[in-house]
Image (cartoon, rainbow, N blue to C red; front, side, top):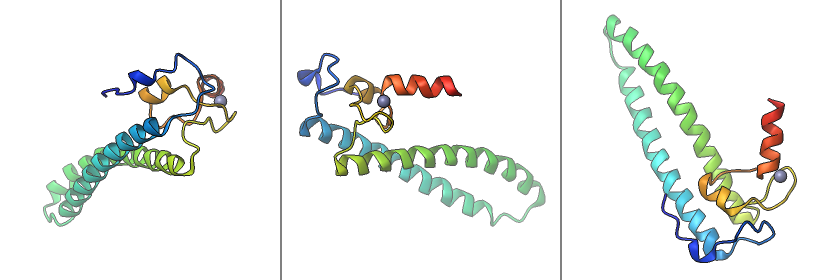
Length: 131
Ligand SMILES: [Zn+2]
C-alpha cells in the first residue's frame, strides 16, 4: 500500500484527530478494496451457479470439493467485506479510528497497516490474551 500521509506524520501522538485529508485517504483505500472484493465475490458466485448445472456424477464430486474451498474463501472475503463496510460507515459517522472498547484514538500508523482495526493496540493485546 502506498502511504501518502508522510507530511502529516503524527509521531505516535494518539490524541490527534484524523484530519479530513486522512479520512479521505482511508475512505478511498477502503472503497478500492471493497470494489475489488465485491467484483471477485460476484464472479465466484456466478461460477458456483454455473457448476450447479453440471449433470455428470463424477463432476459433482470434484465440484463439491471445489465448492467447499470456494466457500471458505468466499466466507473470508465476505467477512472482510463486512469489516470494510463497517469502517466506511464509521468514517461517515465520524467514529472511524476510535477503539470500540476504550474509545481511545487508534494510532494512525496502526490504521495504515490494518485499515479496519476496531481496537487500539492495548485492547487488542488484552483480547488476544483472553483467547
Ligand atoms: Zn482500546
